[in-house]
Image 1 (cartoon, rainbow, N blue to C red):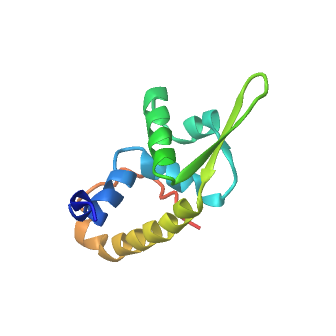
Image 2 (image 1 turned 90 degrees about the vertical axis):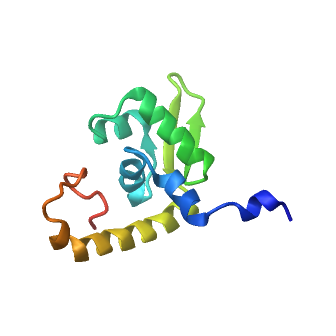
Length: 121
């Protein structure tokens, strides 16, 4: 077996996949299972630039968290939605949210970067 495989850390891999300022917002936004178009995602994630949105979508697609479907229309239509792996990840994110809720009082002096949790049911 390749020795570099043994050097991988599953937790670090997970954090690489979901880490960064925008990826969680995008994943949570796609939680309903329906396809989202690029501009709809851009409007729903305030403050994200075109460059950061494109990079985040490409990264999440590369890791198999979301799928990209391009329709050959004029103008070209592109839609994104969570894959099965992305839906599995939502369950883990809900568990992290629940942990945060349990410990929120301890950290009440800190401010969240998420004004309204997108994982709310």
